[in-house]
Every structure is written in C-alpha cells, then in structure tokens.
Image (cartoon, rainbow, N blue to C red; front, side, top):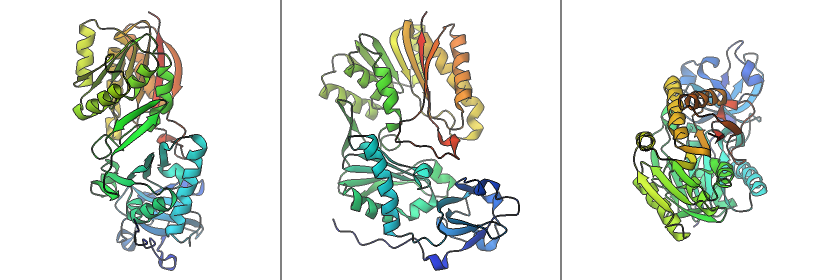
Length: 406
C-alpha cells in the first residue's frame, strides 16, 4: 500500500540546546548513551519541552555532544541518537539506520527470523523490532521512538515491504516514559505469523502473546539444551509456546511435559507439536509453575532434562532481594526434579540481577536441594541481541546449564 510520507521529527535549525551541569559530563564524555535528569540543567524551558523531542546536548563549557532524544518526565532524560548536532531526522535517516540493522542480521542468519533492532546497541534507543518473515512486531519503549513510529513504519516498508507491522507498545518501560499502552496493526490487515527455528515452524500470537510473540534471545540456548535431550524425559517449565520442549522433541526426546499458566500459549504449543507429529509424546499442563513444581517434587517426579525459564522476577530495582530468593527457590525445586545424571537449564531475564548474583542464588538453591552439580555453560542472549559497550547492564539474559550427577 502507498503511505503518505511521514514528516521529519523536527527542523534542525529549531532544535533546542540543553546544557549539562558543571562536572556532570563525565559519563557522556566517555560515550555513555544516556544523560540523567540530575546531570542536565533542567530549567523551566527544558521542563516544558515535549517528550521525545530531539535536542542538542552540550557540556557546561559548550562542548557539543550531538543530537539526543529528550524526555523531561523521565529519569533517563536524554538518549543519544547521533554525533551530528544538525542531523536531519527524516525518512532517509531512519532508513539508513534500519538498513545497518538489517545488514547485520542478514549476515548472522540465513532466514528472516530474528530481532531486527535491539535498542541502544543498534542506535535506536528504546526501540525493539522482531522479524517473523514478512511480519514485524515493533515496541517503542521511549518517547522519542514513539514519536518516530510513522517514519519507522515507512522506512521498514521501503526496506522489507512487510505484509504487516504490529505494535506491541505495552511494555512496563513505557510507563516510566509517561507513555500509554497501545497495541494493534500499524500496517496491513491481519497479523498471523509464525517463526522457523531449525526444522520447526512455531505458531505464535503477535497481538496478545507475551512481549513481541517469541523469545529470539533464547535461540542458541534452545539448540544447546535440545542437543542433550535424546531418549530423555523433558520438563519445560514456564514454557510459553513450547520453544525449549519442542526443540527437544525434534532432537529425539522420549517425552515432553509443557508447563505454563497461559492456556492460549499452551494451545499454540500443542498446535505446533501436532503439526510436526509430536502429539503422542508432548503433553501440556496449565498452572502456576512454582506451585506445580512443588507438587511434582512432593510426588517424586523425575526427568532427564528440566528447563526453568521464568518471566523476570525483578522487574524493578526494589524487587532485587525478593527475586534472588525466588531464583534460589526455583533452583531447589527444579534440581529436585532432575534424575541422577540429568541436566538442568535455568535462566533469568531480570536485568536488575547480575550474572554473579544469579549464579550465587542458583548455587544456594542447589545446596538446599542437596544436589551436587557441574556448571557446563553460562550463557546469554543470541547474536541478534547486541549490547552497547557502555550499557553492560542491558545484557539482561543469563542462563546456566548444569549436569547433576547424583
């Protein structure tokens, strides 16, 4: 379809100038892509600017730091966009930035199923785009990217010509930016989609499933874990649409039990299982995973391979201590369900919990379960989830693959 050309974000000659406070430019000068509200001279003029407006950021000495996207209502007040303070933020700019992302993913993967844009690491702060062949799911988690949506849709139409683009603007991060939730079609008439991984074709729900419909970040971990599944019984807890469990089925697992609280997600998983001829060895159980795992442990259930990949336990920094206790409890339960000589893969997507803290919590849980273990691998997200060098905390995904000999 022909879309009217979206207007540029602003006119560079009218771009407001914001000044960093004396002595508060150290991080920005070192290349950090964020400037916090307590680092910027936040006078009445700055506080009156519209959220998401491009600004020129300068040091207290006038040193230019380029073009940033500003939100006076957010703790992260400015996010880096370009070294050029006078850059034209028009369709050509966003097309070029997205073309760089597309070129990298095409170099990494032979098929068009991947995270196309991963926020700051890809030069588009707060923006997430997942690609499912000719359908795209987009999440604009900052005011600047929310303002840029018409330009982004037009640029994606230029580069990929997608059949549909779905907005999944319902992440908690939007509330921190003062943005409302909004999901729906930005382009196209229907949003049916699927994702291919290995020899499997998964059914997904872009409009009401979790996040943007699929967890590309666990791609490499699914393959590694599935390689251990032959002739084993497998429990996939917090399974969503069955990525780990069905990958294990494809690698010759003897039986797979899927566990999740979402009935629609389990229905999609069982549809995928049936289409691939796994219906006889795959079963689904709906319930609160932590409660069900406790019941299974009490009933003496054991599996050759257990996967525990829960949603974030620490969505906010204040949840940190509670999350660590939760991960320790999860490790105790999951380890208790692994038969001697079996394997456990356990993961955290809580960016407020560091890899070291997560590892310590899991070790404590293993001790509580009285299960000795060998740590085989400490893993993260796939290559389509790059990390900005100055934002190591954005490496949110942690995974531990363990062998439990006895």
